[in-house]
Length: 324
Image (cartoon, rainbow, N blue to C red; front, top):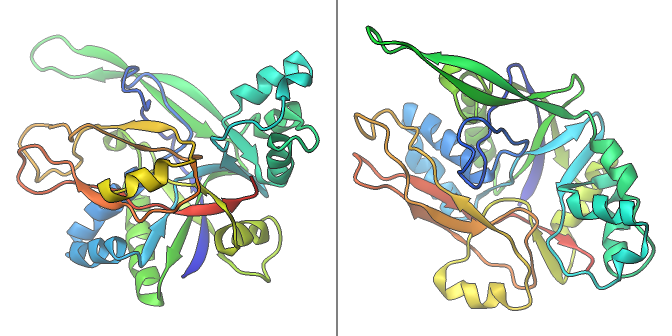
């Protein structure tokens, strides 16, 4: 399998719903989960009648897709690994420890330093890591009006994420062959016009691909580091997307692993599914940063509930190796 990294520049603000489902439209995050991206691409594939092709390629492992993480200039950010500390990180200053705990992303340029600190080999400068992340994006609350003609209009509020000029989101995709790459990039190009995330009907989430880098041994840093993490020999693997082991894989995946569970729900985005908006079946999956010792294959779940066609949640993993 060969890998490409895509950098997205957002032309309009982005709305990403809260994982807990409790904040409604008011909040907005900075990570677009891989299953959200794949669902959006699948809807695009239906429009050009290539949905069977995309489904088959993903199910057979010929396409693997990460979640979308922030970048700023040449700095890439990875999710913080979910792993038990082997060292007493509280020995650093109390302020540094608080920042240490609050960090959601680790700059790739500091990732080895962070892993070493977990193993008790040196300290990690959480303040520097936070500073590198500072200014990547801002979250605003925008007022909208729901028109209920002839009744009174109803105001509501939407949380939006706006990225700084040199910042945006990136993701990694693995391909078995050029056929899968061509299909994926065709769908990604279509998706860029309609946007990704929530409230796309209001013009949110539109983007353009401003960078496409093939990850190889010859590529420059920081991309070379990512290539090594994707293709090297490791004993611990960190998930960089949302995935879930099949029933017969769960015991091995959980043995000696550390993971976070994400609530995955939401409404079906297909207009053909039903006359009125219907929710997908609620489920929980392993989130980005989960660390395991035994990789699993994952699967595609049907989360439809009484609509006109199946609705899929794409839950096959993409791992990078970590020295833990």
